Amino acid sequence: MRVPFDVAAVRRDFMELGAVILPGFFDARRLKPIVAAVDEHWKQSDKSPLRHSDFDRFETYPTAWGPVAEANPLFLTLRDDPDLVALTRAAIGSDFTHGVDLVMYTGKGKGQAWHQDCPPDDLSKFTVNRLIYVRDVDPAQGALVYVPGSHKFGRIPPGGNQDPMPGEVHLSPRAGTVAIMNSLCYHRVTANQLNEPRVSINFRVQPPNVAQDYDKVAAFRGGTYDFRTEKVLDQR
Ligand SMILES: O=C(O)CCC(=O)C(=O)O
Image 1 (cartoon, rainbow, N blue to C red):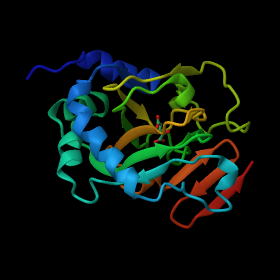
Image 2 (tube, protein in one colour):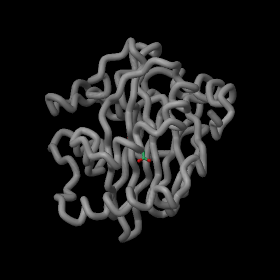
Image 3 (cartoon, rainbow, N blue to C red):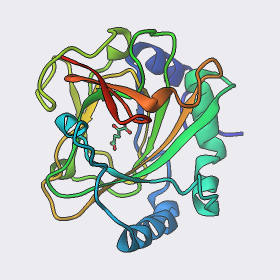
Image 4 (cartoon, rainbow, N blue to C red):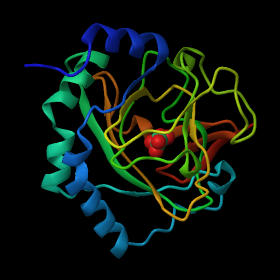
């Protein structure tokens, strides 16, 4: 099978940088039915972001829909795309299990604070964000900002939710871009300043030694949060 990437480079970048960014991985034309399904979904659904008084301090506001959990064939086909599977294997090895699928909608004024998507105490354990951008993301709509190599640094240090960090890289992905990111890599999404919602898809996976609910505890600069109990576990 022809794979549209360099397997060795993907593995190296995932190990060293914690992130592999592949613009044009998917043909944007192929993603049009997905865009239409996303638009249709959000036309009819509640777009209020997760709001829990204790979570507000983390200023992280996407609204998420899980179409794979609903066995939606369009999204299942995208999640199981052979090239995406090959890319995942190149990054983390041939065995992995599926985690949540998130189609994220971020409205005007909202973004995502600096975070790590799983507990940062044991660096050998991590979940993996497989982000697919189905529409161009204007820089003013919310850049994906990350610190290459930070998956090796341990817990994200205290600080402001959107304060710049040394070494950060800003990415405004175009439609068809895929970003594979170790969830321990420090990352944030800057606030959407436009009226058009920002859309991203995340088909999370994890290596076989990691539990499927490992991403239910996330670390922010201001503390850690358990999404199951909706409780702040500690504050900084
Ligand atoms: O939507 C994005 O670009 C990033 C999403 C993200 O930070 C996450 O799923 O943890």
